[in-house]
Length: 89
Image (tube, one colour):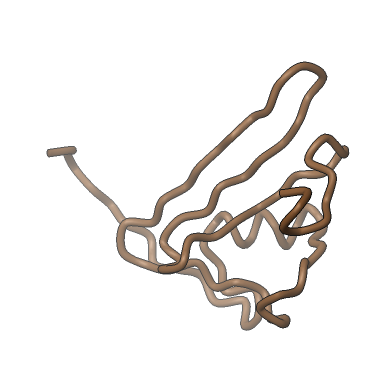
């Protein structure tokens, strides 16, 4: 991450990455002695990434990040539909 993005992975920041198909995001965070790595995968929708140049690094505050993770298109403030599964196969 340092070499590719010019960012310090040990900074007090939460880094969010999306896969190419926009069906999953990973969040990376350093705390004292190790990294946290969280992932969210969408079953039917795609994450609507904030607008900006594809090569840009974007800074989000807590609320827009929460909206993004909850499944909102934060450019238009339209939510994804809620899925109601009854079982896991």
